[in-house]
Image 1 (cartoon, rainbow, N blue to C red):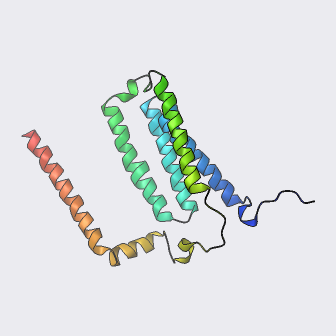
Image 2: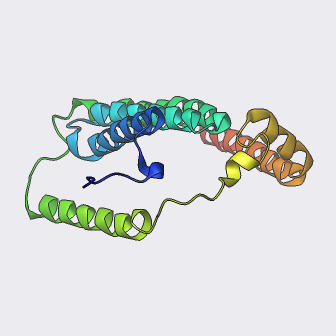
Image 3: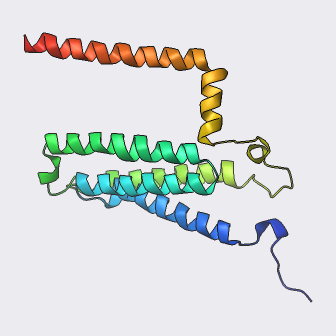
Length: 183
């Protein structure tokens, strides 16, 4: 009489364990942004931990370009902007963002749990282990910076250049608005 055994595709490997640990850290830090952070600074630091954990997950999945972008754009630029706004508005001096715990907090947690359960039921449960090859692994250089750069400058050069022109117009427009206000 054999006992219960997991299918071959569901065995715990080192990669699965590392991914699970990183996913747990990302989930806890995301919850820390909203629920555990008593001050905006603590929430922002939880967001930094979340961004860095997501970047590590991207690196472990073999998508270096997404990991690099996550670190440079979100952890670097966006968080500097968030911290600048927090300091500019002097939000760090407040004792707590959540002053009263009433029925709204309970309802929000129940709705969040319901949403999580719905997403879990719709996305995770239907996934069954399959032996189909992963498409990303079949594409040579998928997620690598050189493959993305080559694709941007050959197949998508027109949209790439239009995005750069739009960013340039936005920068020039903001400079003109600032100069007009000073006069």
